[in-house]
Image 1 (cartoon, rainbow, N blue to C red):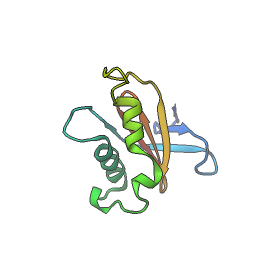
Image 2 (image 1 turned 120 degrees about the vertical axis):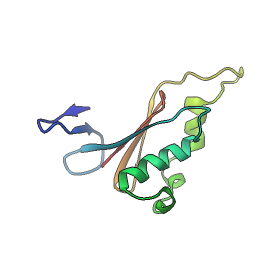
Image 3 (image 1 turned 180 degrees about the vertical axis):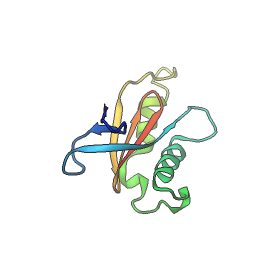
Image 4 (image 1 turned 90 degrees about the horizontal axis):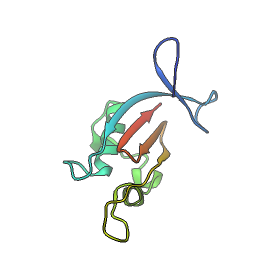
Length: 112
């Protein structure tokens, strides 16, 4: 992530707008075993970025953009021995006009 002279957060990603820069507009933290599952946390972060209720997010459908179950299994699910998985990485996907990143440490970032 780079910080511009105006102090806003921007990140270089492939795709997106013409200059390849996205502005961070919202972050949320997924807590495994917490009150909200991964899907609800992602939807909540996108909805807050858009300034709408999570129930109003219906175009596109999240599951058309990313396989949340596979993501949750890869980063937070148990491995074959039943122990908690300690996967490392980041998954990026586009949701409408937003770029969403989900990190293995639970941080979800929404950029526009």
